[in-house]
Amino acid sequence: MTARTPGQDPVSAPSAADVDHSAAVTAAVVDGSVLTPGAPLRTAVFDAVRADRDGPVTHELIGLTGHHRPAVRRTALTLLTELAFNGPPSWQGPIEAAAARLHDPDPDARRAAVRLLVRAGGTDRARTALDTHPDPATRIALADALLFHLPHTPCPPGPLRTDPLPGIRLAACIAELRAAPEEEWAALDAQAVAELAALSDRDADRARILGSRWGDALSRQDRERHCYATATRLLTGAAGAHGRRVGVHLARRALQIWRAAPAALTPHLAALVRTAPPALRDLAVDTLCASRTATRLAADDLAALLPATHHPRSDTAWTITYALATVDDPRAAPSVHARLASGAPPAGAVAAVRGLLRSGTADPTELVPVIRQLLRSGDSLSVLTATAMSDDLGPAAAACVPELIEALRAECALRDAQGTEWATRRELRLVTALGRIGAPARAAVPLLERLTRESRQRAGYRALALSRITGERHFIESALRSPSRLRRYVPDRSALFEWLLDHGGLTPEQSRQLRDLVFTLPSGMQVFGARAVWRNEGPAAAGELLAVLPQYLGDDLFGPVAMTTLAAMGEHARPALPQLRALIDRRTRLPHHAGSDDADMNADEQLLEAARQTVAAVTAWPRSPPAAS
Image (tube, rainbow, N blue to C red):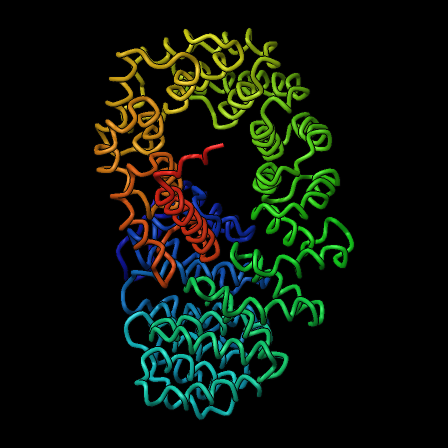
C-alpha cells in the first residue's frame, strides 16, 4: 500500500515494524533507559542514525525535544549530543532543535540544548546567542561549551575575559591558562582568583567543573608547584566561600595528576575537616578519602570525625570508614561492623572487610551472622558480597556452609533451567568460597561432585575446592590432565599448582605443564603462575621470570602480582630494580583506565606502594646472618 502526495511519486507507507520501532524509541526516551550504556535499544538507535543521519530515528528524537515533560526533553537533547560525536561538521536538524530549546523553561534543558548546539556544529548560532541571550546561566553554559567543548575550532578566550559576568570571565581565564606564555601566567592567575571571589550563589554548583578545569590547565603547562600554591590560597579563604569549594576540587584534581600532591595539600584539606561548616567539611573529607596517601596522612583527623557523623549509615561516616579500613587502619573496625549489621551492605563492603583482615581487627563473630543473612536474602548483589566476604574469612566462615550450599544449589538449578552452558560468576564464587573454608565444608562435597559437566569446571574451580576440602590431590591432577575448552586465552590455573606445591609438590609432567602455561603466551597465567614457577624451580628460573615480569609492572591489575613474585625472588630480582625505581620516581600518575580519575589515582597509589615494598625486599638481600649467641 502506498501514500501519494500531489505532484510527487508514490512513497511507501510506514510498515508496522517501523511504527513499532518508533514507539520503542519513544518509550526508551520517556523512561530514560536509552541513556543506559549497553542497552540494546540504545545500540539500535546509534546503528540507525549511523546508517541514516537524517532518517526517521533522528526525526523522532528531534520531535521529543519538544515533549511536555522536562526530563524527556533533556534525555532527547542529551542523546542527540552523544549521537553528534564523530558526525558531520554541521548537523542541521539537531542544530535547529537545540536553538529552539535555548529558551526552555527548564534550566537543565537549556544547558543540554547548549551542548547539543555546539556539538552538532552550530558554533555561529552559539556565539550569537552568547551575545544576546538574557539568562546569565545560559550565557555561562554557552561560554563553557564554546571554550571547552568545540571539537576543532576553539573560541578565542581573550575577548571573554572582559565579559560582564564573572563566571564567564573566570572560564575565559582558565581556558587561556592552558596555552598562555609564561610571562602572562601571573596576570591570569591573579584575575582568575579575583573573578572567583566575585562569583554569586548561582555559580556555586560549578565548583567541581571549575576546579577540575583549572587543574587540567595547570597540568598542561606542567605547573605543578603553581597548582599547589593556587589550591592553598583558595583553601585558606583567599577567594571567599565559593573559592574554598573550588579549591577543594582543584586539590582533588592535583591529587589525581601528581604524586607529590597529597603531601603538599593534605594539611590544608585536613584543616577544613576540623573547622569548616558541614557541607564544605564533607567535601574535604571526600577528597581526602579518595586518595590512599592522603587518607593515611589525615587519618587522625578523619578518625576523630567518625563520632561526629552520628548515624552509622550516613554517607560521610561510611566514606571515612571505608577509606580508613582500606589502608588497614584498625580504628575503622567498629564502624565497619556496625554498618554491616545495620542493613544492606554498602558499596565497598568487601574491600573494607579485607582491610580489617589485614589489620587483624576483623571479628568473625560479628561478620558471620551478617554473611549468613545476606546469603539467605536471595538478592544477587548481596549474595555476591556475602560470598566474597566468606571467601576472605576462609575457615572462620565455617558456620556459613549450609547457606553457601543452598545458594550454590539454587544458582545451579536456575542456570540449568535457563540452559546456561558456562558457570556464572556467582557459581564460581560460591564454589571457591566453599573450598576456602576447607574441611569444615565437607557437607558440600556431594554437590560439588555432581557438577561434572565439562564447561562447569572452568579453570579448575571445582577441582580446587574439592582438593581443599578433602585434602586429596587427585581432583586437581585430573583437572590438569583435562584440556581447557577456552581457546581464546590461557586460563589462570596458578592456584591449582600452588595447592599441589603445598601438598607434596609437582610431578615432572606437572612442572612441564606449568612452564608451558607461564612462558608460552602472554596472559594472566603468565603473571599469576610465575610465583608457582619460582617456588617450584627457584633461582634456575630467575632469568626466564625476569624476561617476562617487568613488562607487567605498570599494569594496575597484574603489576602488584608481578611485584609479589619479584619480592619473593629477593636478590635474584635485582636486575628488575631499574624498572621498579623508574616507576617509583615518576612525578605524575601512571595512565590507567580503571573507570574514573579517582580509580586511576587509587591504582597508581597501590602500584607505588607495592613497588616500594618490592624494592625494600629485593635490596634487603642477602640478609645478615643471625648474631652468634
